[in-house]
Amino acid sequence: MQQWLRIRDQSRNNPRNVISSYFSRITSNWTISLRYLMPRSILAPIVLTLLCTSSLTPTTLAQGLDPEQPSPINNLLHFWGNEELSDCWESFDGDGSGGSADQGYGEEVDGGDAERLEVDVTCRMKYDFDENVYLKAGMRITLEFGLRIDHAEAESEEDEDLTITLMKGSEVVDSRSFPDIATDEDIQLKWELDITENSTWWNTSEGEPSVRFQISKAGWDASGTPCSGPLQMLKCGGFFRIYYSNNQEGIRTQILFPIGETPEVIIEEEPEEKGLPGFGLITGLSAMAMAVIAPRRGLQTPRQ
Image (tube, rainbow, N blue to C red):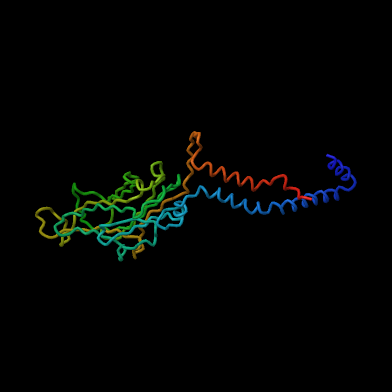
């Protein structure tokens, strides 16, 4: 108190000098204190880093680096498969075409004694998700498929138009038919899906995406005539082709998912008497951080 009164009286005569002297004293005290607190200042960031990184899991870090795993920056699903279209798979790895057909497409051909083009093919994930995938609300999924189909243009009760179904595990997310699709020429299909409540979360192993292709149409015979049943003398057939992501025709077969950062889910639980698991570790680290950051009063003034 006496020091403050002395500074007040001096400020009336020369306030500029008094202020300069006052800040000089503060700077001097800081310099002395820092000399004693430097080791603690170096240790403090280390302890705080341990606290901040304790919530990160190895799978979270691996997911951001693994090209086979979906993420906000790795959100394009590619399609691959063999030549006969007996095996079709999906992957978020754009370079993961190992084992896929070199010509860039798979084709199912119904010929011989078959009178109809009957196709039911499902492309599934090659690798399971390491973590659940969250899609941004209010955004859209963009689906693109390159196909080529050949069948007779005859109509019958058995006909089923081309149908493409997006699945999430065993749950249907979207299914649509294409009744007037061109035959024997390359086609590019594209549409968008709004993110709804049932398409926000894609769970590991039980809720991963798959795409099913179905069509049933009458085939052609060798003379260019639709197959006509049991009296048909010539061989009949048709084909169904899916262009893979490595095709040479520039046709796109892919799905773009608007993947966002997984929101933090807070579950409130009543504390147990023995304490929550791991809480003692966090409390201990916090106490160490406070001890490092807050200097003891006895060390603020150097010994004489």
